[in-house]
Image (cartoon, rainbow, N blue to C red):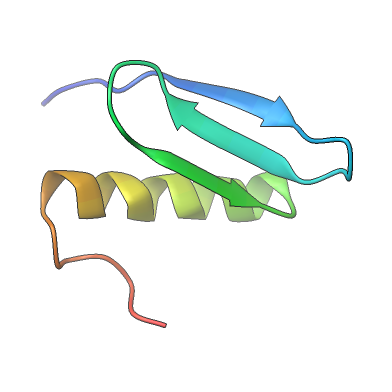
Length: 55
């Protein structure tokens, strides 16, 4: 299992952004709880394309 380090930032509008330090994974959300879900989904899509959530 590989570890992926994320940098989290709060935007001026109060939303949150996450970017992986050593991979091309980026996501954003309105709350930290939502951001954690979005990070998990982004990692799944990055590691196994086609397996993420569908709209």
